[in-house]
Amino acid sequence: MLCDRLWRNARLATLAPGKPGLGVVEDGIIACRDGLISHVGPAADAPAALDAREIVDCHGRWITPGLIDCHTHLVYAGDRSAEFEQRLNGVTYEEIARHGGGIASTVRATRAASRAQLVTCARERLNALVAEGVTTVEIKSGYGLDLETERRLLEVAGDLADLCNVTVSRTFLGAHAVPPEFRGRADEYIAGICDVMIPTLAQEGLIDAVDAFCERIGFSREQTQRVFEAARSRGLPVKLHAEQLSNMGGAALAASFGAMSADHLEYADAAAVEAMASAGTTAVLLPGAFYFLRETQLPPLDLLRARRVPMALATDHNPGTSPISSLLLVLNLAATLFRMTVDECVIGVTRAAAQALGLGARAGTLETGKQCDLAIWDIERPAELVYRIGFNPLHQRIWRGS
Image (cartoon, helix red, strand yellow):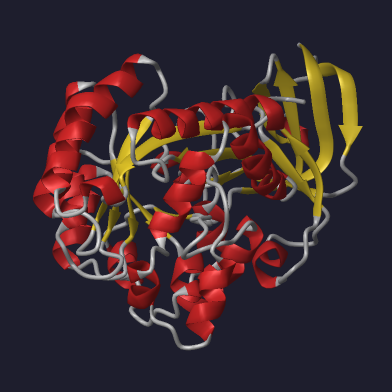
């Protein structure tokens, strides 16, 4: 069996379901053909006829699946560092918002930016993730809040996939905030999302999933349900920013629509977790936002564990509440702030993250038939990926076999 490339003398964290822990193989090999894994497992079990055009000796390095950042807002213009400084000096978020700051300031800057300008800014952010072994990333819209700009953001996300050799999942987040021109008319804005934006952008092939911000400072449960119904009518999967600041019943609503994920979840209760478990909805935990906002309400980790709800981790990169461009840092934050284990953290940015994006059949584990997306590490044990801060031990990133 002739393959394109074969990696030998490697320690593998396969993350294969049904295997204990991280699915470790101490002396492993991985073979790739046409961008897919054609063989993976212990060297002793390799077929005698297995050969490749290129054989790479890993010298005992570790190989994990390529990392997956399953919740980001990477495409926007401007930043909010000045507002951050104001808050440090005692100005409240509400005062900043009243003077045109907050999400509104990002929307203004983003609407004024060209496609090329947005690509340049977002590419720098994405390159930081790619440099840490990220091979798949979700990118949300949501800083345009009108059809023209939301389209531009989703188009830029597609541009980034080609420019950075990364798999991009595009999520429409028109229901992120009420735009200034619709202030006091949230229902009318939601009608535009459901009747115009989702049908148009779906027809243009720009949407992989639909998201919303269900929160007292965002949209109500009823408004979110209308968005989900519009997505379902177009055959689009949904996900939700749920229970970050209060319990609005968003996670249970998302589960009732078979959502791929419910994200944040600090205020989720037992009923929400039960609904997610029954629906197969992944929990996406975002310790970067928890840290940046100095939150104290922890997500219900024990409930999620007890009901075996998959727990993914992501950067939630955005200019206002989580300006983090390091998925490795998120692993440490999850361990130190949420008390997640090493195995939970690594699973959270591989197998569980793939499930959160509906990509479990293609990515997130080292298994035959899946995309050959690999991260090769100069480490002695996987715990180093979680333990170290400001340290990038990536030796090589492989995307679809190259």
